[in-house]
Amino acid sequence: MTRPDDALSTLRVALGERSYPIHIGPGLLGDPRWLTPHLAGRQVMVVTNETVAPLYLSRLRQGLGDGLEVRELVLPDGEATKTLASVERIWDALLEAGFNRRCTLVALGGGVIGDMVGFAAACYQRGVAFVQVPTTLLSQVDSSVGGKTGVNHPRGKNMIGAFWQPRAVLIDTETLTTLPSRELSAGLAEVIKYGLIRDAGFLGWLEAHMAELRGLEAAALTRAIERSCSLKAEIVAEDETEQGVRALLNLGHTFGHAIETHQGYGRWLHGEAVGTGMLMAAELSQRLGWLDGADVARTRAILAAADLPLAAPADMTPEDFLAIMRLDKKNLDDRLRLILLTRLGEACVHDRTPPECLTSLLEAFPRR
Image (cartoon, rainbow, N blue to C red; front, side, top):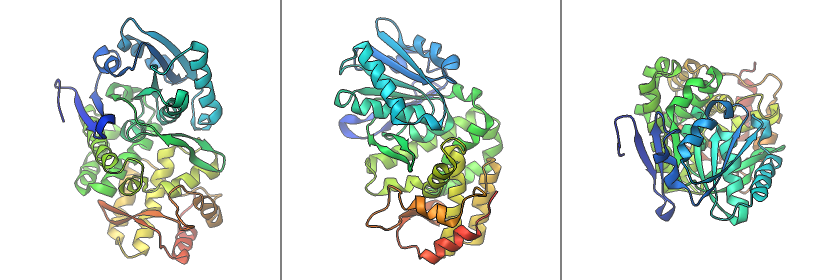
């Protein structure tokens, strides 16, 4: 990690010729030093949404400097808009502007905007540059890093997409001051995930500092973002296209995606569904003999401290869960592959869960 000044930290995702920096600090949006070096040419398309645009679009424009051909596209907000139709609007805007292969797309917003803009960049003229400028905690610590892009399908979340790495990730920590408390909690779910799968010491630090994180204390948030991004960068460098260890980043996601798909995209925030899914994974890990009751209680307690839901939707049956989980992207050869915990701070991919064990978990897990 390098520190150009006292307030900024820079990590690097090591992918050879496609390596890129993650800049973390306050005030990055309005400073041309951090964005303009990563533009492929003069043509820039900034894509954001109706919630973020009034807050940060003008500041981002200041950070682009002069001498560029800049266009803007403001899309509706929400997970329900993460569709091919929205991506087509991005392509339409690029074509109408006459943008060429040296254009750069800038994703200003949360995970939905980042995923769609990345996918649009991956496909436009067979691949153009893009930069991630995430404005939610969840997108800052997870979706903006690693090159997973795509859209939802009515039958499954993120089922259409591509691996396409950004040229840079700019995390302006000041954007979190306008983040609603529910969105903050959703982001904390992904932060907690890193402790559960890879760093028990970080998990302990989160337990001790959850009040400061929920209170938007700057130093605590910066440390949480830095450690989360560092762990994500390490894993992506080891396994860019999720052939092995990167799958561990999906702790709770198989259960969580089932909740999102069943309930309708946007009713549950992604982090809320993942938080519940991580508790389900912990309880299943206990049933398999890997975690003990104290481990599960500790997992439940930190999720509760982050104000995340601890129960599944009241109208979801075990059959509903299983029908959607069978479509999960991680599954191979008709085997359900789940990310489970062998202990707190260590995870594994498991594809031999006895069906009766999984069914009993789904039947016993609380509903609300």
